[in-house]
Length: 260
Image (cartoon, rainbow, N blue to C red; front, side):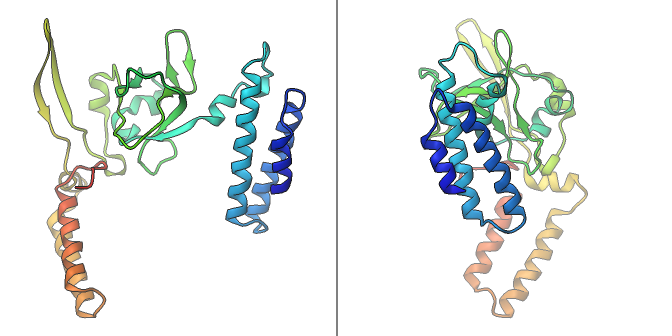
């Protein structure tokens, strides 16, 4: 099957792209069936999916210059879109997007002097498959992808606008993600002024809001660690590291933080 997909990749052109597309979709479906039955390894599946994506990317380059794009290729841009993992929870910060499909303006806050060259959808860091944004507003329509910049080793920030007070009131602690940090900004004639900054909830507070005693959990963990050390499963250094990590997490932000 991998050999067949390689041959399909090499044969994509203006005359064959539709036939190649259907053959590639058929191979992908067959691959999933073989994988579920145990006849194909994870590595083989990865090769087939990689080749499938390369075939679609090659087809996308061909059809972008066509006057008429067949109906079956209208969603090709979405299928090829990157998934940008963002440090937030849709359920906590944008509950109306998940519940009633409200659309909020979203745009990059970084590298505004560069033209975005990637098409992407957004996913959050929760474990829920619904924690994603796949509809975006622009001046004329609703798009399935958002133009973004290629990521590099520097932080990349996005802004979500017009969320209003409802999102803050409706927000919950899905996956134990607490309230995000807030900045109160006042617009003035000669610029702006940061009036107030409110730090986001700490993990300890979120745990206690769910009915648990954070320090009792710490004591229970300490007993388990001490028992493991007495049994020779942990060294003193490992014991101190585990306790230090747990203590730091209790007073830390509920979202991902940069490692110091």
